[in-house]
Length: 331
Image 1 (cartoon, rainbow, N blue to C red):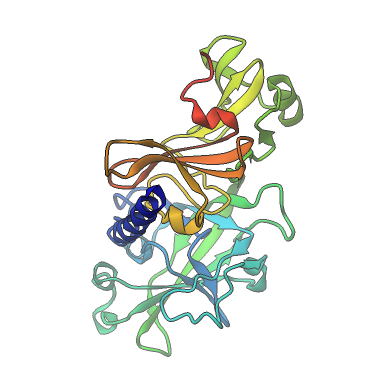
Image 2: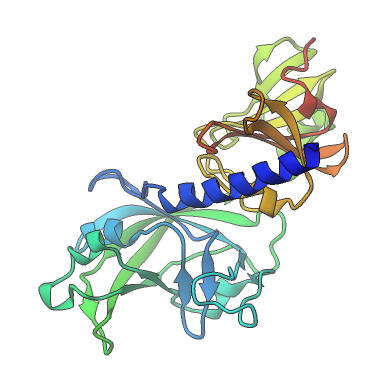
C-alpha cells in the first residue's frame, strides 16, 4: 500500500514539477541595469557546429543590453549534457554528456529559441526570427580538460554586447558578445558525502589545515554547533558534533548544485532522477506530498536530503550520514 502511494505521489510530483518548470519565470535579469548571469552547466547540447541551449530564455536579457558593456557571469561545467528532449532522438542523444566539449570551439556559439518578448526587441525585418545565436568572442573560459576537483566554474567578465544581425538564414539572428575576463571562481557540487574537499567526518582542524579556510562558529558551542567560512559560497554551512563535520547544508540564496544537477528554487523530478531510491522522512499530513526526502548512496552513511515547499520548489538541501535524520545535532 505504501509503495503504491509512493509511486502515485512520485507521478504527481513529476507532473507538477514539469508544470512548475514550464511556468518558471525568467530571473536572468530583473531589470535592464542588473548584472547578467547565464548558467551553461545544464540543458546545453552539442550540435555539429554550435551549442544548443534548452534552459530558461536568456535572449531577451541580452538583447536589452545590445550595444552596451555590462558585467556578465557565465557558469560552465566540464561536461555538457545532451538531453533527450525537443527533437533530439534517443539515437542522437548521449545522456552521459560530453566531457571538455567547450574546448571543441575556439569561439563558442550558443543558440537558443527566441520568445515573443525577445522578438519584439529585434529589428522589424527580423521580427519573425525564431533563434538567436550568440558568439562568445575573447576570453571565454571553462574548466580545464580533465578537471575533477572543481568541475564547475563561475567566470566574471566585462562583456561588450553587439547589435543583433541577420545571417544567411532569415529565421536566425546573430549576436556577438566580446568578453574580457575579470576573475574566475571554482564552484564545487554537493555530493552525498562532500562539498569539494570538505567531507562529512572531517575534523574542523583538518578542514582548516587542508583548505586553509578559517571556520567561524555561527551557532552552538565549541563541541557542537554550526560553522561557516567567509570563503564558502553564500548559503553553505556545516553542522558539527564532537569537532567533526556531521552535515553540510545548502540554504537560500545559493547557486550550488548537486552532482546530479539539482539546485534550490527548482522543481526537479526527483523521483525520476533517483528512480526508486528516495526515502520519505517527513509528511505534512495524510495524503499529502512529502516535504523531505533522502537519497542514500550508502544507507545511513552517505546521502542527500531534499526539502521542498507545497509548490514542490526545493527550499534546502543537505549532505551527510545519520545526521540527515536529525534536525539539530546538539541534543
